[in-house]
Length: 578
Ligand code: M6R
View 1 (spheres, rainbow, N blue to C red):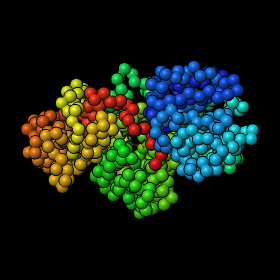
View 2 (cartoon, helix red, strand yellow):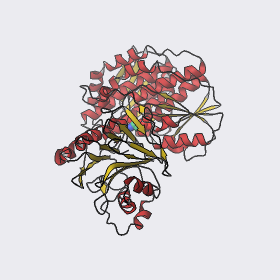
View 3 (tube, rainbow, N blue to C red):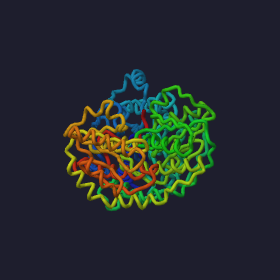
View 4 (cartoon, rainbow, N blue to C red):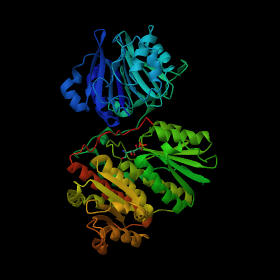
C-alpha cells in the first residue's frame, strides 16, 4: 500500500520518478507527490488524484535536480488531499520524507515535538520532524535514531539539500534498491525501476541504507554495517504493458491460457504428507486457497483448513511441527498473510509460499516457495494470478497423492471461453444497471461463486454476495426478486441436479438466473434467463474454467458502467497494512 520511489544520479530525477510512480500506482492512487533537491533547497509538488490528473496540473517533470523522492498514496490517516499527500517536510523545510506503512505511536511522538508545526493529519509527518530533531550532520544516522523511536510499520526515504544521499529504512513495508551505473534507484517494488536495472538489493526488516550516486551502504537496526547481497531479477518489462488492450485486467484475463501452460512446468518441491494442511491468504488468493481445500482433500486425502490470514493471526491456531502451512499471495507482501506465516513458523509448522512476485517478503520468509508464473499482474482485480495459484494447488495435490491430474487440455478450453467475449458483453449489457447480485455454486465451484462476486463488487461497485447454493434456503433466498439476479455455476458434475433445483427456486420467485453451464447442456436454458457456456472437463477441474466467464462478466459490467477497471476506488494492489 502506497508506492515510494527515489532516484540519485546524474540524470534529471523528476522524469524518472514520474515514470516510477506511474508503475507503482497500482499500490495506491489517491494522491501523488514528489520532492527534489535543487540549488540548496527542496522543491516540492503534490496534489490529490491519480498520477496523470495531478501531473497534468503540476507538471512534475519540470522539477529540477538529480536527487529526488516520490510517493503515490493509499490513505490511512487523513483523507486524500494535497496537505496529506507525501512528501512531508520538516519545520525548517530542510528534510523531506515519503513513507509507506503506519506509525502507531505517532500521537505520542507528536507530543514530544511540540515546537514543530504539523501541516497534515497523517501519521507520517512525524517522521520528517523527528529526522530534523535528530539530525547532526549525517542523514543516515538521523534516520537510525528516528526509526528507533517508531512503533509500527514503515518504508521510508528521506532527503536533505545538505546531504548527497537518500537515507532509507524498512520495517514491515517492502523496499528495494535498484543498482545502476553511477546512479541508484529506490522503489516499493522493482516495477519502480526495472526498466533501468535488474540488479536489486532488498532491505530486510529493521535494516536501513545510505544510497548515494556511486554506492549503497547497508546497516542493521543497531547501526552495524552489513554487506548488501544484490540479486538479479527475471522480469519481462513488455509483460507489464497493456499491449493494445483497453485495460490491464482484460489483457490479464486473456493471458490465462499461456499462464496455465507456463504453470504446468513449474518445479514442485518434494513434499511430505503433513498431519494437516493450513492455507492462509486474503481476498482472491483466499478463494484460490478454499478451492485448494477441495482439490487437496479430494486427491491427497489430507485434512485442509483454510483461514483468512487476518483471522488466523489473531486466533490461537492448533498448529505444530507435523503440519504444513501454505501461504498464498500474488504480491508476497500482504501484511496479514505475512503475519500468519510468521505465527505458523513460531509454532514450529513447516511453511510453503505460493507466490507470484519473486523475492517478495513472504517468498523469502517461507521454508520453501513455489513461484507462480503469472508474470506481472497490474490490474488491481486479480485474475491470472488466481488461475496460476489454482494450477499450482492441483500440482501440489499431484505431488502429495502421486496421481496425475489431466491439466494439459485446460489452456485450449480457456481459449474457447475467451472467444465468447462478445457474447458475455451482450449479457453484461442486460444487467449492468442492476444494484444487487447473488452468486451461487456448490462443492468445487462454491469458492468460484465467492470469487465471481468479489470480482463484480470490487470493479463495478455493485453489491454482490457469493453463497454455497445449498445455503440459499437458509436465508439468502429472501433477497430474490425481479431486481436481484443470481449467477449460478452449474456445470455437469455430481451436484448438477442439486444446483438446478436451486435455480428453479430462484426462477419461481421471479429472479433472473445467469447460468455458467457445460457446452451441450441444452436443458439448462429452461432454468436460466441467460447461459454462458464452458467446455466439458473433469468435475474437479471446473473451477479453472468456470471462473473465466465470471471474470469477463465482471469486466464488461464495470466497463459499461464506466468504472476505472484497473484502479477501482478505495483499493490497492498490495495490502501492506493490517
Ligand atoms: O497479493 P495478495 O494475493 O496477497 O493479495 C490478496 C488480496 O488483497 C487480493 O487478492 C485482492 O482481494 C484482489 N483485489 C482481488 O481481486
